[in-house]
Amino acid sequence: MTTLTENESTAARGRGTTPAPSRKGRVSGRTAGRAAILVVATFVTLGPVVWTVLTSMRPPTESLGAGGSIFSGGLDFSSYTDVFQQVNMWLLIWNSALVTGIIAAGQMFTAALAGYVFARIDFKGRGLLFSLVLATMMVPVQVTIVPVFMLIRGMGLSDTLLALILPAIPTAFGTFLMRQFFMGLPGELAEAAAIDGASPFRTFRSVYLPLAWPGLAIVGILAFNFHWNEFFRPLIMTISEENFTMPLGLVSLQGNMGTGSVATVLAGVVLSMIPALVVFLFGQRYLREGLTAGINK
Amino acid sequence: MSTTVKSSPAIALQQVPNAKGRGKEKGGRRLAALFLAPTIIGITIFTLVPIVASLTLAFFRWDIISTPEFVGVDNFVSIGADPTIRRAFLNTIGFVAVAVSLQLTVSIGLAVLIQSKMPSWLRTFFRSAFFFPLVLSAASVSIIMSYLFNQNFGLVNQIIGLVGIPAVPWLTSQAGAMVVIILVYVWQNFGFTFLLIIGGLSSIPVEMYEASSIDGATGWKQFKNITLPLLSPTLLVASVMAIISALQIFDQPYVITRGGPGDSTRTAVMVIYETAFKQLDFGRAFAIGIVLTLLIMLVTAVQFRLSRRFVHYN
Image (cartoon, rainbow over all chains, first blue to last red; front, side):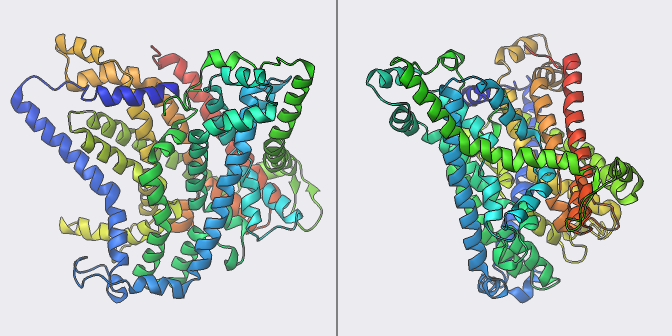
């Protein structure tokens, strides 16, 4: 991942690396072609999202058939009040926020602790234990979910929010990320702290942890984004509607509405996208870095 | 930011100094045990135990209520015998082949295009636009797309209608449904592959292109002789990751088609879900899960074996 991050900066400096062909007429023709492809690609990528936002703001009766101009009839926000009547939207938002918030905080906490030990404290079998943790990353969730469901049921936690939260807190990926992060911090800090007589805990708490925030932000944002959008686990772990998270609530709303108002469902979808949009606008860098972390390990 | 995830071997080799002798070392060990406990215990309970349980119970018939009954390899045999499960695996493999190829092609194309001369704000805009679908939930995207691809009022049919193409029964025909699942999946996920390839492209030295332009090589020739070979390590990583995640596809077909029409969009993970929670045949669900995991491991192994032959590391 070192190369990747460094690449970014090289890229920023030396873009336009693909040299243009020599003859001028062909240059402009080719440039126009390239621009056209990029514009079409952007349209295809953002189009469905723009359509969703616009349709959610159309009068519900009009949105059933998408005929007619999107811009006709002006803006209408009745679908947004509508969706709160159709489903318990506040509860969905609350459940999603609670589950996602606790998982993100829990992952940051446990990953910081474990990552620190794997990076900075030597003990017998450390390498083996770390390899074991990494190996668990390769097993897909879909394979462990059924036994996890049984465990949760055995603990008497089935159909609760805890069933979603507890299994998601230990994080192999977050631990890996935080280990990398702590390894990038200078070891002299620990030496200096030891000379000052700081205990191992104190060295962690007062010297290294305050420097670890950028790494923790990556773990937290990644966890938030992933679990906010998560569909498979909530589908399995929750049964009653009062424990649904947003994606599950929206899919069941879509099912219940049948051929009902598209705008109502899309209003819910737009609401559920808001946190993702916030993450995208303010945390995109962390997200990109986290997603590509570990590629070159 | 580049310092944040940079791994520095020089530092990694250093250990926390036990300057104050034994007591300190003991304190360090106690701290290690305490700090590792949440993660190690958590991973043991929620990943390791489930893996062992899967591997064991795959040889039993169990409906969660009565006592498990040992059936040997019956569950594995039935995977090949059950037409629905067999179809689901074939669907998944076909889906992965097409979706991943498409994802790689689109990503390479756009990554190369975005390297051309343009204002940096514009480049940032394109890059962000292509990345955006990744932050959305697959469930929400699937809801949106099932409206867009609706045969009667969907925008897609309206647009192709403009050029005189009759309405396509996207979601009600077997081939159409699979095409939609592939397009929706690639739409949402190509941004990640794109991101990896951008990183790989920018590590190709500019001099390589300059030297080859002097030799008169342009466009496609440069792409074939310089870009592709030097990009191959990145492409390998990108394709392994794309295949692994595509093999686990569930959300899109579950929301858009529920596996239909017929079994045409049923996938491996969908049959795990249905076998366990609809048919309450947990042993068989475990067996399907194990086969899927083996498939994932096999793909990874084959790809790395292949890589030794044709990937150029510089």
